Image 1 (cartoon, rainbow, N blue to C red):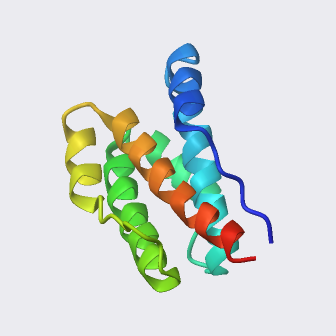
Image 2 (cartoon, rainbow, N blue to C red; image 1 turned 120 degrees about the horizontal axis):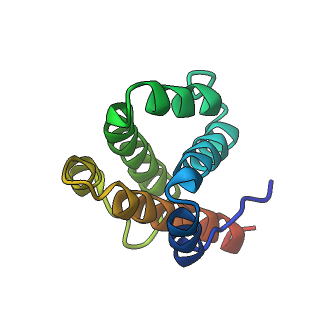
Length: 121
């Protein structure tokens, strides 16, 4: 299966140009990628976006923590060199209005997984 490495700088630009609308697209994409990789039925990308919207972003703080933990677990399981548990910064940054930084960190760590998987094929 082929997973898509996404450029965090492009994500940043798209989030800024769309005044934050692309944040929700990125949340959906990351959630969908992880659902596809893990085959977990409890990951629902559409619901993740809806919960972020109806809680005015509060669920987004939890989302950052939850998915950064999952990404770290996957990194450790597949032997990613320099696996990073970014769950604490991913949790704290959105509290101070830096959700976008958290999103970029999460995408960067997810890219490490896809790069590791592509080198092992």
